[in-house]
Image (cartoon, one colour):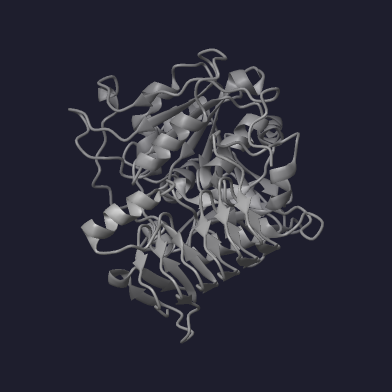
Length: 492
């Protein structure tokens, strides 16, 4: 599996920004309860500037993700973008790789919620390549200042408070990207479509997903892909009321067809339009999907849709995370357009942090339809239809089926086990003990599974909370918590 190709990668140093006093002129009220669009807002339609290569004219803004109850406990100690996926990667790697492969090399990652592991991953994965100051992945950590005492209040608030950073380079467009989606997209095509249509905002919509419930709203688009109506449901983005706005400039004839498509939350916004919206027209708005986009449409901005028909997964729940991992197992020949093909694409590789791990060691292991990460130690076990993450230790006579073993951060030596056993009254090693059986489960990092343990959801429970015992059940999937200890002879 190719992780890094020195001949095609264009990366450089990462910087972490924690505070600044240069943004005092863009203060705003964090107590906004509803969308407010000033009637005196100036004309927002701004003609596109002279076109330049993407690595000079486009900056990507990647959002690390906030708290999400549906992903708990996977987000108990990490943000959504930092969740491990497909044995060797993090979710945010898919989005960063899309940027790099599309020649977008000015990448800002805005982080706040449980950001320690995400900041560490980004700084270690995408730094030190020395290709100049205008090619970078730069982390902007949430900060407070004398003017803004609170943390970021939402996606729009975060972007507004970081505009002074984004203005360092004279780009013409911003590409706003959620950091927890799994897909492969050529952003060059998206940017070209945005420029060709002379749109103020372009939103990526899903054309091949019929049953997707997007938390980023839905769009009514006409035959020219002009967005004529944008709707956010009450359950989306914490809204209490339905938000639905119609473009005041749209004029459709009776014979013009239209369709509703879900939004992915991926936006291309002109630099001047972004500044006007956040600093002049919607200075109190907190969220991009529920406030900025409806506000722009209601003010007469030209908003277009760019249709995407490839594989796309919004990893917003434990079930979605489980399905995404299971899809990564399937062979390319069986899943046309599936994300698994991305792992083996020499032209558009998936990048992640380079690691100096030994090859996985397997002793009489029987493995079918599975992915095994780097540095694993597998004894006489059976693994079917599963994802086994880095540094996983699996003992004799273990059977793992349709499961995700996230892996561990360290190799635990025998002397460490004996010492910890005396301190914590347990001698269960990190990994999976002998004669254990695991079926349709997620075992998070550094978990200690004893011998002869049955993790099989014996009672077919759909939802259950046993955090005190080291596990929860979501959508019928058992999730063993990070650092949990499951005693010998336990049955779940």
